[in-house]
Image (cartoon, rainbow, N blue to C red; front, side, top):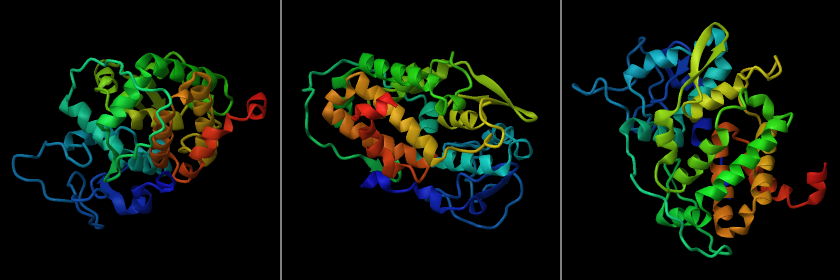
Length: 312
């Protein structure tokens, strides 16, 4: 099963990605076409040539420019520790996260109005998961799938998921604030990943940035997926000995069980073709957060089928 494959970047050690920015590992060195030099370079010098006149350009692989250096440095290795910074670098180097960063920078608004489509709830066709160079790609089929479900249904689903997460003693420790519009953002993200416009990216353009104090540093968080999960790792609700650790398989499995339980309770599994694709999509995206978790995606989706599990 393709969702059981680890992320491509997990095979690359953080030491191989050094870009000589304090507290950060290179995003370019792990990307095809950007070079894989293992030698150290002076601070501020990239590991591959930059053409004249393109010094401030955005890298098409990582979505970063040299102007991002100061923002990235703000995380600070001294205050946060190398483990968290290495995990953040892997997350930011993920092809899907890089594409989201490029979409935000390029202002590629679809300008489309989402219109629901009439598609049979029990559409039993299995649509192949579209992944190219490690990044998921939406198609006309996935667009039809999400429009057959509709944004109101997605909102009900994600709203219940966060209601459950807020009272779950395991997952709530990762959520520093309940007043952020978590469920709305998640619903928009799902719609965008299935190809129904760019509502999540547009929401990010007007989203107020939240700041969090991490050690001696104050950083912007929750303005994209990588910063939001970085904030979750450093949530003040976490146990001191786990503060700063990235997600582990047990975290991912509890998250997925709650997630798919909410989907079942809100009737999402009646849309069989959509949920068949969505379960595999979750497995794909889960790999960058916890590389050992994708094999448990289907089990997590089945977990809520048994009433005994829910009663516990």
